[in-house]
Image 1 (cartoon, helix red, strand yellow):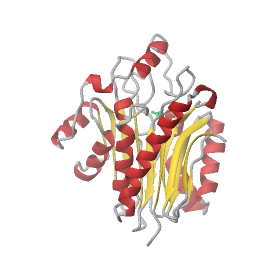
Image 2 (spheres, rainbow, N blue to C red):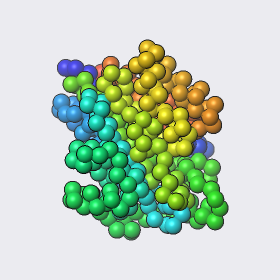
Image 3 (spheres, rainbow, N blue to C red):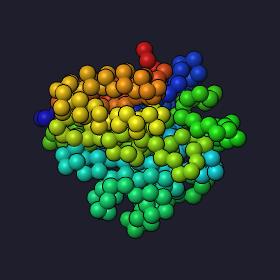
Image 4 (cartoon, rainbow, N blue to C red):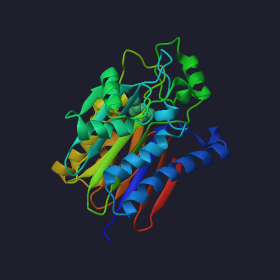
Length: 310
Ligand code: ASP
């Protein structure tokens, strides 16, 4: 059988072993494992990488530990505005949503936008209208309320600060989610979903819904999903840059990831990381922050779930 593989992330940032309890660590690992399992099941059965990415991200969106879907962080106004995107490496089709409120699984909407809207990126109320047309499920405010996230907002609401939900504050343990996969047909796909940054306002969107910045997939090169301080990832066009280094300069996946995550982003001051897979099923999980919730599983048996640097 041809190779297949999947990688997932649950956010990068100041994630320190010293701040994590054994139980919490286990919960995160289990969350990542369930996502890997959901995607792997589809790949194993010969399904499409796009469906595997969507399934893995749905599991993470439904888990309140991660800053996407149910666990999305609060905006300055005490609401949730979620962003997501997905890309098909075979066709270069892409779909994305920015600033959607109340939708249970933004990644499903991103895929529906790609497949049924004739557009790539829909925002805010218009995106919600399209989601209703697609009969996608919405949830009430209670579903999205988590005490920890609300406390994170209260800590900084009176300041001009926006914050990665896992950096800078006492609670630094949650994050944006993403998945990348290669299926047995040789097709790559990538997807990312997030609540963005705590205390964001003015309709701020980060890199997650921006194709080429937070998400990119191309069968010729690689599939990438990013997490970190979105403004820097947009300016460095991170996901597409890695693909370009491979396509135009002949870099390996590892060389391209190292160049962008450890040099370009660091020079700009951009903290974060990404998951990456190439058409041969090689996987890279680089980050320049303290930690990144991450995991990967390959058809040859290679398997990793980890959180910290070491
Ligand atoms: N990249 C996301 C954003 O800036 C945040 C994250 O990765 O946690 O919206």
